[in-house]
Length: 290
Length: 296
Figure 1 (cartoon, rainbow over the protein chains, first blue to last red):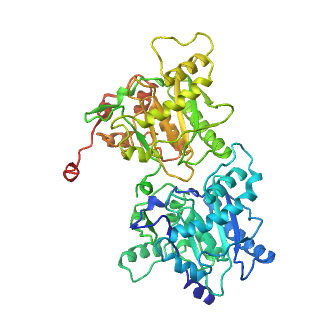
Figure 2: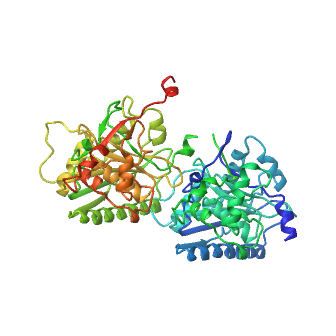
Figure 3: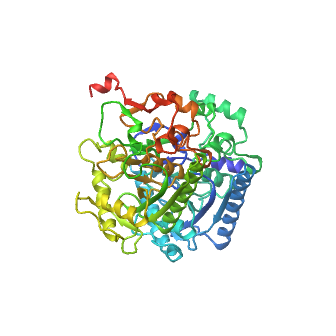
């Protein structure tokens, strides 16, 4: 637990999109957006393991262990769905080849530094476009229904091919990097825009963090509030009173003691009932707009 | 900014940009989808536009699934009013290809409307006509040839051929855009006029949205306050109170929980009578601009 909190000190969470100004977001903006709209039905989770040309590598055992954690995390979400009578079926298919490309900026620190730049999002997206371009050729032969996916951008192409090959509406595309000592990184890219497809970048193996990111991709909002901020005090009280064990409010805790609260259920599409107090919950997520 | 705030709304477009009051009953029993009865041909064309994503086999299949759900729902709802409707879906093909490439004016529907679609000439109307022309030529007419006078445009020829070949009472023309992760609006065109063929352009694959589009072509009044760019329904509260589950009010909800209320049933021709208290609900007046907007 102590180690985990040290790791979390280096965490950042950004819902990135195009560039330019930042505006406050509204609840409805999170819902039904981009590739992962509602967390229901068949959902393909497609992890792509990425390693630096020089540095620690993904051994077969490492990948096996990672997929085991991923499976554990996703089964937890599936069980929560089942408790709510929601049909949800995760299909996990790891990309067969480890991609040799590394992180944008060549390291976790480099990636974090890059995020501070004005053209960071474009650079990030281009970086993962290049990885997707190489990865998509492996999926080509698996497409089952004509017309097959034509010439489109790289990440879009990979996701479109995966949707056609596995006949699923939602695809969770994950780029998984090796952590560097205690330096970790997790990012959800493009979740609040429709200019590019959304995807996950992570170095975390903990089921709680993986689930946190997957739920966020489907619209869940982070509820880890800083006590010092006036605006967030009211939100924190609501969360503490009504869903103290919500996974989105307890990053770092084990999934065994966590649940999915009403607000998160609403955002990920498990219910359409919007409760009045939802309007008083401020999310830390900001929307970056063009 | 625009792209972020637009959700999959349904836009209801009037035949002209009117600054006068509009009555929803003008769309009743009008154009090629006149009354929700008898045999209905739903002719669907999948379009690969430049900025929307190309259609894949899975997207076409799942969109057809959504449409089938809509057709079953419409049949079930019509039965409640004692009407049997026969809906025959036809998916347009050209040289055995399931899709056609045609660049959408302005890139997206939302961009087209924000840049003044309908203020002068409808670019989207031209776009649709261009596509209809190609499909019309691919269909051979059975029986009587098309009349030479009055001269028919491509859209009219397409509809006439479909009606004649299938002995249909009504024809619905859908253009589908593949927007599986891009949010864009959907829109119906020409449903209050009879000078041009009515049609709908659909984005995404929400069955509730498709159902609302389908009924709009038959004359249903859009009761969602976000749907109109220039007008507003004066007595909207009446619909919210009396028809809370009506599809035209709630097309963002699950189709299984929605129905065709008496108001919509009257407009689409499922009933011939309506309580007089709903007379004011048909009225749509121009949105009054705020002072600050007037001087822009």
